[in-house]
Length: 53
Image 1 (cartoon, rainbow, N blue to C red):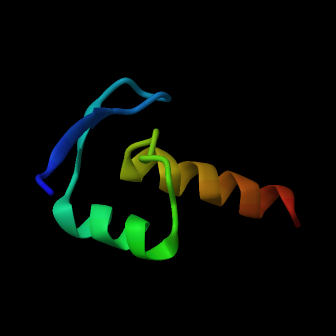
Image 2: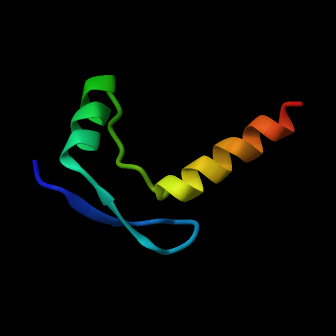
Image 3: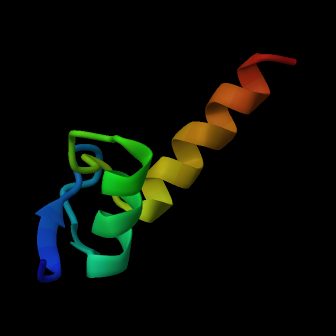
């Protein structure tokens, strides 16, 4: 596996999907690559957590 450059569906910025992350996703049984960059994933998770309160 090699590092992949992906484009975030929220902000449109490119981000790196590293070999280590790919191995982690495979180990966890995830079949899809991430569609959001780490910053947008963090923001989305924070929004979900705030909505639960």
